[in-house]
Image (cartoon, rainbow, N blue to C red; front, top):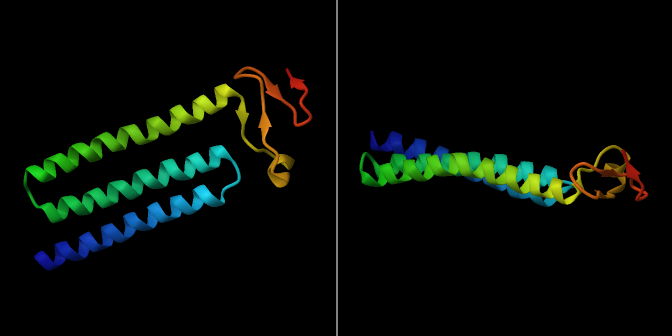
Length: 126
């Protein structure tokens, strides 16, 4: 039984590490702020949950497992919420995602506020 738990733990740790690694590569390689936030938010949440699940299996049925469950529950809700809060703050500050030809050229489109979009040449759009 201990061998089976060790094998499953190893698989969960490998899976969690894979997702964390893919998320960090996505943060480096993706073109703009919003796609980087998506890569970091989604993959890090899944990777961390898989690693915590592996830790729960190794800890057995004890108080440590209850504490790890509390950490996993907290992370499951706070990671996506904080990602949304940061993305919303960027949108409110006027940072717009790269779309169409801006994505190909690498030009960031910044605007005046949440209700006003700005064209690449700086003129306001209604």
